[in-house]
Length: 485
Image (cartoon, rainbow, N blue to C red; front, side, top):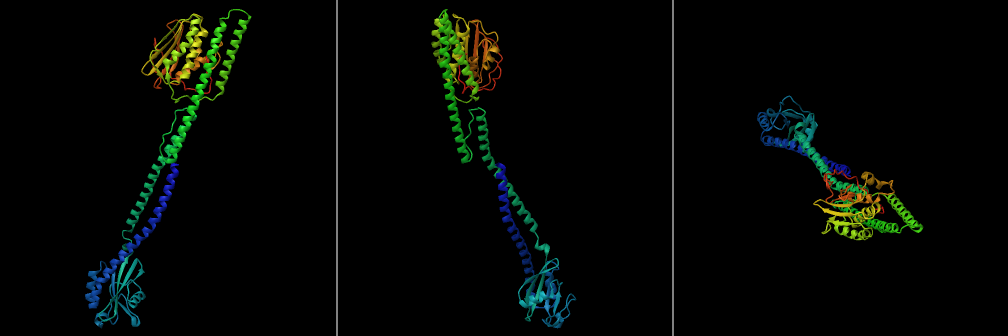
C-alpha cells in the first residue's frame, strides 16, 4: 500500500508539473524574444529623430554609431529623398532597381529587398528571419515625405539569452515538487500502513494463542474502526475461553474430588466380596474418568492462556480447601498444618485454577501415602512471587522428573500425572515453575512458584539453592477438563 501511494503521487505530481511547466516554458521563451525585439525597437527609435532632420551621410553614420550597440544596424534611404550629393552614391553594399530603387546608405543589409519595400509601403514595423537570427524593420518618415527604413539585426543568441537558465530553474522546481510529493506520500503511506501492519501482527499473535494481543486504536478512521472491532473480538474470545476454562476446572473438581472421597470410604469397608467389588468398581470408575479427561484434553486445540487477566486470594482458597480436606484427614488420623494464610495474598491466577491445583496435590497425598501420614500447606508471600508449599511425611518420590513427565502420559504406577500437569501449567502461566523435592516432614514437597510480575524466575530457592529453568511455552488448558491424578 505504501509503494502504491508513492507511485500514484509521483504520477499525479508529474502530470501536474508537465501541465504547468510546458506552457510556462513557452511563455518564458516568448518573453525572452519580446525583450530582444524591444531593445531593437529602442535602438531604431534613437535614429528616427536624426532621419527626420537630415539625410546627410556623415551625420547619420555618427548617429547610427552612437545608437547601435554593435554593427547590427542599417539605414535604408530611398533614392530622391534628398539632394544627389546626400544620397546618390551609396556605399557599395546594395543598389536599387526601377522607380522604387532602394539604397543602403549606412550599415550592412541583411533583410531582403522585397521585405524592405513591403515595410516602406505598409508604413509599419515588421520582423523577418535572416541567417543567424532576425531583423527588425522600422519605417521612419523623412522631412521630404519619403519613408526610410531602419534595419536592426537581432542575433539568435540574444533571443535565447537567459532562456536556458530559466528552463533549468523551472525543471528544478518541477523535480523538487515531485520529490516533495514522494516524501509526503511516503509519510502518508507510513501513517496508513503502520496501523494495518499492527493489526496483521496482532491477528497473527491472537492466532498463535497470545490472547493479550491488542491493537492501538490509531490511524485513519477505517483502521481505527478495524482496531476497535479486533479488540472487541479479542475480548470476547478471552471471555469465552475463560468461561470454558472455569467450567473445565469446575468439572474436574466436581468429578475428581468426590471420587477420591469415595475411594477412601471404599477402602474402609473392610474385607469381603461386596467390599472388594465396591473397591474394584471405584477403581474402574476412576480409570474411566482419567480416560475421559485425557481424551477430552488431547482432542481440543491448544491455546495459550497468557493475557486472561484474572486473579484471586490464595490465602482464602487455601483455607477453604483445607477445611474440606481436613475432615477426611481427621477420619484417617492425619495431622494437618496450615501456615501463611492469615492475611490476603493476591496472585494472578484464576480461583478455579488454584482450587484444581490444590485438590490435585492434596488428593495425591491421600492417594499415595498411608493413613495417619501428616501433611502441611504453607504460603509464602514475597515482593515479586508467591510460593505455595504442599508437603507430607510419606515415603517421598524417588524420581521427581519422571513424576513431572507423567503429565504427558500414563505412569507405570497407574497414575496419569494430570494433577501435577495442572499444577505445572498454573505456575508457568504466570512465568513461574514447579519443583519436587524432599520436605522437612520427611516426605515429598511440591513447591509452586507463582510469579507476580510475569518475569522469568531467577536463581533462588527455599531451604537450599535451586536452579530455575526458563519455563517452556505455555499450552492452554482452556479446552481440557481437569482432574486430580
